[in-house]
Image 1 (cartoon, helix red, strand yellow):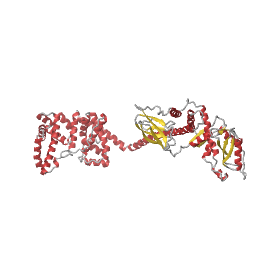
Image 2 (cartoon, rainbow over the protein chains, first blue to last red):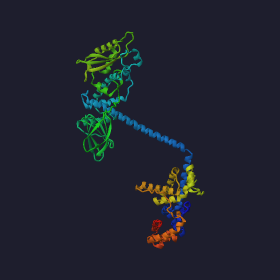
Image 3 (cartoon, chains in turn purple, cyan):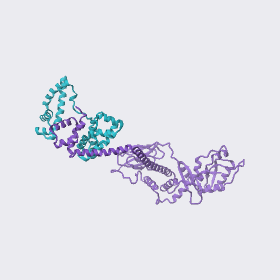
Length: 444
Length: 192
């Protein structure tokens, strides 16, 4: 049987003739027989039953195809390759642009949330500097973040003062002098942070907050409600939970069994969020009795696990050896008094907490630094060169607010050290907040 | 244009497939496609039951072919294009009506094996067939004899045997299948 011959044997015309009865019996039989052998033909034969004008139909298809065909050919020979690349490039640009946007948005958000998490935790744990308690401690956090994004120019002044040129150090410092550690320079800027706190505390009404602050506020308002009513749940505002809300309860502890407060529990599927309260207890709203959740807390490794509604489960978080990244604090000082009332410095998360409890000068660190630089005498060493460098002093504040027991931690030169001690002894009084200890860095 | 001029060369399908695969020349493909376009249109009509849809369908299958034929190794073009066309129609139906349709992936090969057998067996087959024909149901036997022995067309068979026109074909098809099964069994028994 010649299969090859089939293709030209039957055309639309044949089918038309078949259905219109123009075919002879013999022809019909031949077609039917061929159709029995060939499902393709058989299907086609069946199909033509629906066509009233098969020959014209085929003609119109042929025309359309010819048009398309020539179009395609033009494209192939002509601008096709160029257009193709242009198109690919355009698509790439769009995709990359969108990707960047999403990435940056996410990165910024997570940074802010991370940053705002930690200080709040710390300040809540401490015997708070702020008498107003938790509600107030919200505000400074927000303001720090806001300030940090501004990055004032004049603010670098103090930093420059505190860290001397490495060359000068090499020439002038005595062997016992340790290099200036970032820690010291940080201390200087800490007061700025405090000043700023007070400023924000004073106008800590939440009325005119920007969008970001609102989000942060919302988040922490939830935290606050959590602390007042154990196990209260929270969720992302505006996000509706599913039809049948279930509550998943649990407790978050560290590997020694201590509760971890303010951990964030996120339902991976539903995107609902809950925070643990002071006892580490949380309640997460979910539509599923069995859901995957991400549990994260600052200072602990984030973990993912399935949570069930059945019973209150205990989730153990491993402490993370990863430290919170440094927080950049920028402030523009109190009021509009002096230009150099600004400082930029890196403060490690620990430092903020530590610094807050230390004693501070009555008028704040900025005016104290001002006093130091104003009252400083020029000191010459044995070689009659001018003292240049940093002296760090440790001091204890007595009940009257006067500095006592001044110790040199980082010395420069005897004469310089003496001058530094003199400055502090004769300088402004101090306020004790928590600790009696304080540390002063004097730059010559 | 390639689609306006008629099928001029008589090269076998496979030759044209090779040509297209090596050169990508659309003229060659158009030429090849035209050989089956009428049938493809019929297939599309069968599944879509609408002339305009079927026309679109034929064009889309050609588009599909432009890409597909370069990638696939095709040994039997007619069977292959039939399958492509059918799948295309079924996919389209499935997309439109969201009805799950099982796609017959079995490659089309013409189910006539009788010519493959040797001449020696032919005599034996003949006797076997007569025997098997007796075993068929009366209507199937009648339809088969009228169709194959007397070479009548469906319409005539329908009149002569008093069977509805659209059932004639199914009688013949089923009869053929039964006949084939029967003959295979006979051949096996003879071997024993």
